[in-house]
Every structure is written in structure tokens, then in C-alpha cells.
Length: 459
Ligand SMILES: Cc1cc2nc3c(=O)[nH]c(=O)nc-3n(C[C@H](O)[C@H](O)[C@H](O)COP(=O)(O)OP(=O)(O)OC[C@H]3O[C@@H](n4cnc5c(N)ncnc54)[C@H](O)[C@@H]3O)c2cc1C
Ligand SMILES: NC(=O)c1ccc[n+]([C@@H]2O[C@H](COP(=O)([O-])OP(=O)(O)OC[C@H]3O[C@@H](n4cnc5c(N)ncnc54)[C@H](O)[C@@H]3O)[C@@H](O)[C@H]2O)c1
Image (cartoon, rainbow, N blue to C red; front, side):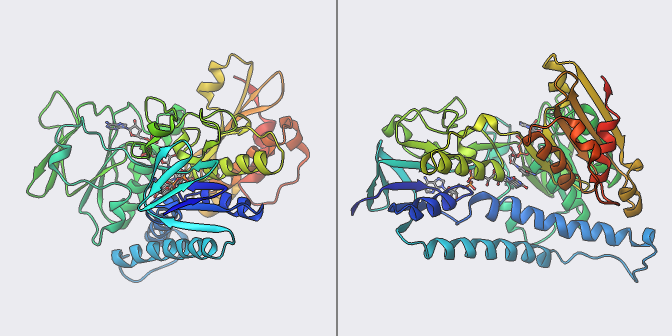
């Protein structure tokens, strides 16, 4: 059947449904196409299930430490893994159901289930439906990257962020390939559930986009919990083994290999653009398959925009959602919002978490600006001491000339929340002195932010 709409949205991830809400409220007829689960990666195989599992893992960890707090538990701490997983699935299912109900009740919206593929620049096919519109919005997201050049990967069964959620028993030994967001969050949670865990990272340090002091401190935190970390793993190769999988991590020596019961591939993502028929619409992609967009998220083809992970301009739920906000504001509110004005903020949800905003110290140094820096260990943060969680530090780097904060990291308890004090200041484009007369609440981690900026010294 052929149908025409005012707009078509492909993908019900973090941007599509909200855009559908705004466009239909503006009286446009909209088709929203989703081939799999509503809510996309974050709700189904990303943020929501992982953060739910991180919460269970933290409870297990705290229970093991209970005596440190004078709380005596009678007996061992045991993990009911199916129950842990059921809790994560429950959170996902509730959220997915809410999105489905919301979209189901949206006036002027037609929801089509199936895979969408371009036939021309204004026409797509979804199963037997041929749909056309003058405005098309791509929110197709991404999926785990599987390295076909990694020897033996085709001979073993491996897990990705999707299939790991189908496990019904705890892995005996989980080898995590890739020591960044997905790898480290899963490594720590499975260790806390009771698995032996080895992280295998090709680079010389974990989460190598961050400063060295961040990588080193995270390494210390994970090793203290019994996780083995193998960096500089230049020759990763797999082979089937009677007990699971042999993972070779070193090129030069035969004994540099481990035998794992399970392997999780966490070495990055690839955009879902390879089977979208982009060539039929003439839409440009870069060498990694990301859709090329301008500062207002328009593709090279008039009337087609790309938002979220598939445009390569962000890789987080909040950046995908912000893409929706930018497009909606520009199209419907007469605004001129641009991606380049977005200040990058994100968190790594290990425990303690890493809250980050803006430049790393390394990036700040490379900028050539005159710099001020300040750093404080969490051992000197009252809240952390009281909670018995003093690992990590908070630090900030600022431009000495403009008095503006360039970047900050809070690796420590509540770092994912406290970082927003800095993020908000940067968004408000205020000098760091603005914090000086703030009266933060005691006892919090955030209360140390004025002290931190008060201690800024030339780098
Ligand atoms: C394990 C993990 C943990 C994460 N944790 C966090 C976190 O804590 N915080 C954070 O900010 N980010 C996190 N992320 C990243 C976050 O999930 C993504 O950045 C976010 O989901 C991207 O949203 P999106 O809308 O761009 O795409 P997606 O959510 O991937 O949605 C794309 C949708 O498009 C559909 N689709 C694709 N192609 C087609 C087609 N041709 N036809 C029809 N439908 C199609 C897909 O089925 C999917 O539903 C995590 C990711 C992973 C993998
Ligand atoms: N807390 C969060 O916000 C969160 C959590 C999970 C995922 N995510 C998103 O998901 C995306 C994907 O996360 P990710 O951790 O898979 O990717 P990533 O790109 O962040 O990290 C991949 C890691 O794998 C390593 N690597 C790459 N190729 C390798 C190889 N051949 N062998 C060994 N190591 C290799 C890299 O050096 C890097 O450390 C991220 O971009 C992130 O935005 C976010």
C-alpha cells in the first residue's frame, strides 16, 4: 500500500518518539517506523538494564562490606542471578510498555512495525507499505561492533551488550574485550555478582580517552575488587576450549592466554546505516558509516535529518535526546540551535562513578590556553568519608584569562550527580568565581565545588 505523510521518522529510540510528539502536536501526519523494540538501545539493551544491574551489584558489594559499617549479616551474601536479571528485564519492560502506550495514543501518528529502507529521497519501503513524505528523520541508532579481523572470532560464541542480557546463569569466568564504558560497567557488576573477570584492552590503559590519573585510579578500584586487567593486548585471538574459550592476549608468548567461560565484546559500536538503502536517497555517510550532518543535523539531502547515535555527533542518550530538541526547536519554534553549542557531559557508571564535563587536562593543555588547575582527593570530602567511600578525586581545569571552566572530572561517590554543578555553570557561561559565594548544602560532594575552584592554581 502507498501512503503519504507530512513526516516520516525511522527508529523509536531516544529522539524519534519525542519528535513524533512535537510534530503531531503541530498537526502534522507522521509515520514512525520501528523494526524491533520501542525505546531502542537505551531502554532495551543499554542504559536501563545496565544501570539496573549496576544497582544490584552495588547492593551485593555493600552487603559484603556491611561489617565495616557495624551491620552484621548472618551468613554469606548470595546472588540469585535469574532474579537479578528479572529485575532488569522488569525495568526495561515497564519503560518499553510506557513508550508503546504513549505512541499508541498519539493522534495523527501511524506506527509501522518493520525494517525501513529508502527507495528514493522521499520514499521508503516497510514490508508491503511504500511511504512517502517531504520530511524524513533518521533515528536508527547503532549496534555492537564485531571485529571480523580478530582471529578466531567466527569460531566461538561471544556475547554482546544485547545477548549478555539473555544469560540465565552467572559466567564462571567472563573475559571482557574492551576497557571502556560497556566493558568496565559489565566487568565490575559481574565481578560483584561473583564471576571471575578479566578485562582485555588493546590500548596501554583503560578508558584511554580520559586523563591518565583517571585511568590509573579506575584500574586501582577494579583491581582491588579482584578484576584482572590486561592492557596492551595487541594480539587478541580466540579459540574454542572444552571449558569455553581460549583468549590469547599477547603476540609474543604462548602462556599469555586465558581460558574464559564467556567472552563479551565491548569494543565500540557501529551505526545501523548499512541496510537503510541510503544510496537510493543519495545520503552521504563517513568512512565509518555515520550519516554526515551539518550543525543543525540536516543531511546533504534537503528534507532529511539524522539524530542520535547514527550521526556520529554523540553516543549517549542525552545527546540523542538533545538532537531531537535541536531539530524540534529549529523546525517548529523558529530557533537557530546548533549541535556545536552542546557542552559534552557524560558519566561512566562504575562504582564509584566518573562524572565528566568538557575538556580533559590533556585537551586543555593542547588548546594552548593559560591554565589553572585544582584537584582534591575524595579522602578530603566529608560526605565520602562518612559514607566510607573515599576512592577517587575531583578536579577542574580553567582558562586563567577568561576565568571560565574548561573541564572537570569527579571520580568518586555521587560524581555522576555532583558534576552537574560544573556543567550548569559552564552552560550559564559564568566565570568560576560565581561559585565562590554559593552556599551549598552540607554534607554533600557538591559542597566542595566552591573550595575546588577556590584552590585553582597555575598548571
Ligand atoms: C550497554 C550500553 C549501556 C549504555 N549506557 C548508557 C548510559 O548509561 N547513559 C547514556 O547516556 N548512554 C548509554 N548508552 C548509549 C545509549 O544507549 C545510546 O546513545 C542511545 O540509546 C542512542 O539512542 P538513539 O535514539 O540514537 O538510537 P537507538 O536507541 O539505538 O534507537 C534506534 C532505533 O532504530 C531502530 N531501527 C534501526 N534501523 C531501523 C530501520 N531500518 N527501520 C526501522 N527501525 C530501525 C532500532 O531498532 C532502534 O530501536 C549505553 C549503550 C549501551 C550499548
Ligand atoms: N555510561 C554511559 O554513558 C555508557 C555506558 C555504556 C555505553 N555507552 C555508549 O556506548 C558506546 C560504546 O561503548 P564501548 O565501551 O563499546 O565503546 P568505546 O568506543 O567507548 O570503547 C571501546 C574500547 O574497546 C577498545 N578496543 C577497540 N578495539 C579493540 C580491539 N580490537 N581489541 C581490544 N580492545 C579494543 C578501545 O580501545 C576502547 O577502550 C560508547 O560510545 C558510549 O557512548 C555509554
